[in-house]
Image 1 (tube, rainbow, N blue to C red):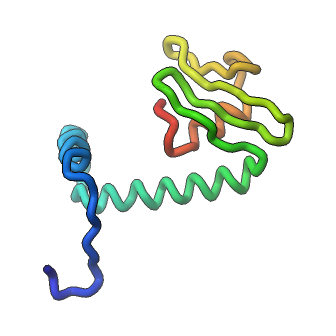
Image 2: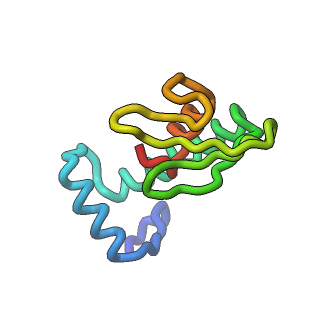
Amino acid sequence: MPTDRNYTNLTINRDRAEKYRDSFETLKINQTFNTWVLDLIESGIDKMRFLRKTFPGYSFAELDGEGFTIIDKTKNKIFRIHYEGKDLICSEHAKAICDHKLYACFHPKFLG
């Protein structure tokens, strides 16, 4: 254990950590894996703050292998965002740019 008290231990699932470390190494990023993971956590938190401020009536509902579901409480509607080929599709706005697509793309759980 380091004597420097500026660090703490973070316990995470070993299998997931090894899987992501292997993927990280193929990206050839010029920083350590631990620093990269902390940067991702910070980025995810910042994105969630942005989404809550910018889209207060939206919430993430479900994520499946085929898309992302958003609840729009202001319209009392559910929207599905998914890919068709290279096109990002909204269940209401099709290929047009819309707030639902922006929300999905900024959400940390969206698999783009």
